[in-house]
Image (cartoon, rainbow, N blue to C red):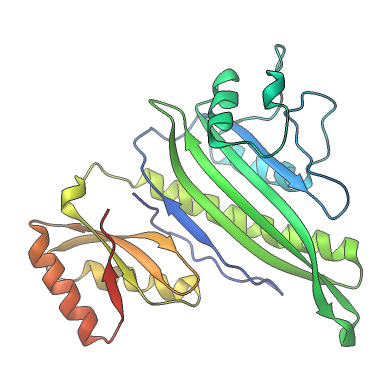
Amino acid sequence: MKISLTNAVFLRGCAAMVATIGILAASAALGGERLVVLVEEQRLEGGPRFWWHCGERAELPFIDALLPHLVRLGRVTIKRCGPDGLHETFRRPGLRASDVVNIASALDGDEALAGTVRYQVRTGDPSLGLVAVNARAELRWTALVPRAQELGTLSLSVDGFAPTLGEAQAKARELLLSQAIDGVDVLLAGLAGVSDVAAADRLRIILEVGGPIAKRLALAPILAGFPGVSSARLHAVRKASTIFELTCKGPVDPARTAVTAGLDAARIAWSFDEP
């Protein structure tokens, strides 16, 4: 199951964002969960920084700025090794999905937010005296109970422009944080709205529609208005296409027929993506 967006995510300032927001499945209750945050941050200078080496905690400006928002959303955030530490095999960057589950379980977590934040110098605008830094985040939200299950992913990329590299990196981080906050809000809103509708009563449809997310979201009520369709939930956002998951009121075939006829009439390119 994927998320249902409640707040449009817009480009801010000089940001260029490509976002993929996906929710695969969710059934756990929301609120009060112990969230283990395993996000490494690689800045322009030096190698990746992370806290699960269990030594002196490195400065992690992006994730430290995101943590208060996670707390406001009701998560109890865990970002230290604890008195017993961690096994040496886990004290490294580049964690695999199985590593994330093992570390979060060792720290008595209910969920894990894992991934990377990286910065890279880009071509700026010399005529204006500006340099550019790209900030990219790849984040995965995983539930550990009742079993390990990836709930959603965020893939974000923004460009920050400023007169110096340090200022450009700070601007890129600020823009990335804003997009990440929007994305987390969207993700959790989708999880809160997930129902237990059987897969047999759902359709996934790929629409060849890109552009601003607000434009794509406008398609949801249109899809939900077709005969035989009770709701339309955003499933994934790609650069040039958008995937929706439709819940059917009854048999799937009548809804499929109505949706395809309506999209053909609107001259919107489409294809079905079976769950």
